[in-house]
Length: 370
Image (cartoon, rainbow, N blue to C red; front, side, top):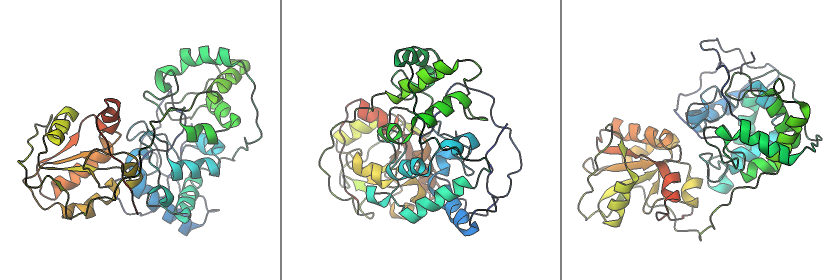
């Protein structure tokens, strides 16, 4: 069984990140626990690997794990998996990190999209991921697959839809109908993943159960998935509120919430507080690029990876703080933990997350970030 090769680096332990796209479906044997992490591949620049790992821990580990083992939050794939890195090109990795995957928990992390990372930081993060395996890379760029798409649709419904969704939208595995994924994952990437799987992850290989022509048919069907339809983008909105003015409706009566398990508040209760113009604080725990694209009315960007530093701007311990994300509890839970650690007991997570909020047709706003 192949395993990712976590780097033995003493990076700061910020708890963190969000999701990149890789295929995952149908449970197989999990990775062995407790195996000692090998040292990094000596062929990589040690300083670049170290910096890349530090960035990965800060921005990606919340979902993908500190050693890129995956499946920490929201079925985020194992980016350090040798089978994944074997076929994932640098362009595939770079585009997914920079642009994210719209309408999924995977944020856009490049500064051009409102994220915190520049080209050099993204390149160092890719160097870190490459250092996690010594398996030779496969060049799949010239592979062209022509299979029976109708047969592939039947096979997908039988074997893949339970995890990936009937339209590739993702159920308990990553979505396959992301425009970025369909643009950057070539035929060879998709076919190799179906045939070999991702050893040590939930994605099993099908080459022992399906014929070569069936795998070609599945590949062709995946490549013909229609990219998900996104709602029309509203005009860019105003910049985020000043951090010293986070309280909504500061002169209004205080909102009162009852949290399930002392942690989760229903979205319907948050909507009612917004519509009533009550006083509370609403924090978007995702990357600022997500906040700019769509956020709850009056919410302020409060990215999970800066929560410990930003929490000093919450000065009223009697006003409720509600945080939300797309996971729907990972990044928002990290923010709520930071708020509570600072002494504010009235802090909770919007239970269903922003994905549910949008599906219900509840109001949202757009913003702009410097």
